[in-house]
Amino acid sequence: MATKIPEAQNRKFKNVFVCRKCQTKMKADPQKILKGKVKCRKCKKVSFRTLKKK
Image (tube, rainbow, N blue to C red; front, side):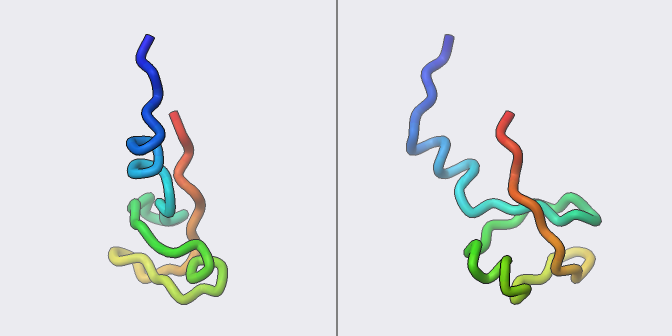
């Protein structure tokens, strides 16, 4: 069984959000996401969710 490396987990999952409409992944500051200052690159929506760990 593979051990989970904290540096790799942070790189893959920290500050990564997914657009609710087009499922595009993007990295952004969580405070900017909550305030609605970040738009999706593809569809220009401001609704995001966090990336789910597998």
